[in-house]
Length: 247
Image 1 (tube, rainbow, N blue to C red):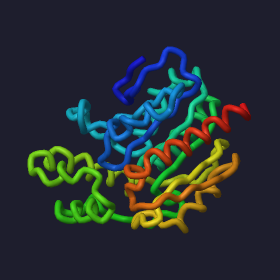
Image 2 (cartoon, one colour):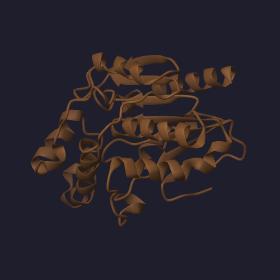
Image 3 (cartoon, rainbow, N blue to C red):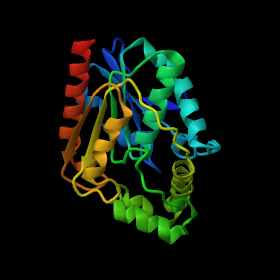
Image 4 (cartoon, one colour):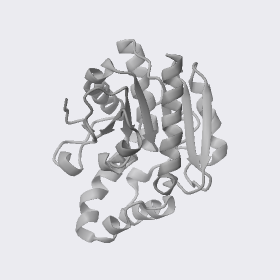
């Protein structure tokens, strides 16, 4: 089972469930490469955005809605097992949009929608980072905690990754959110020192679900999930197990 839009990080013959992970702006599928080892029995699927790594030559999508359509269509073959979605930062908004499409178009509600490091889309403050110069983009990367300092310090690597980062911000900043609720229960995660998504911004996600809401805050900045990975993934595993018991 393969598709250009995603990568199965550790294929399983008979998974009990699947967790589809959506990276942050400028992020890649390999950001979640170690999650599979912490989720036995769960097949971890990482979304691959165009314009980076092995999709470097693929054109950027015209809009975030187009990208959500692409991903929704791509993961339909994965719906033979219970499925949950986890998205960090930009990935949180995408995961919400894909959840909405799965419910409306395919009659499938994920067992959980897990969102991280992003205010609810109807409460997010507008930004225009896709129009910033290189220095402005790099300043934002540093402000958020820069998970890849070696990449951004190397001029050649930086030249490869900045176009994707800028375009991801374009998708976010030009997306017209059509406020609606999903049936899937939402769990919101955040770092207690995240400059992009303060703890007080998380509860607004409860307004977008008819299926119950919970949240968990970890120590750290926007990329708290790097240092807190063991505790975060353990919490995710517990949520998936609880959902399976209620199924």
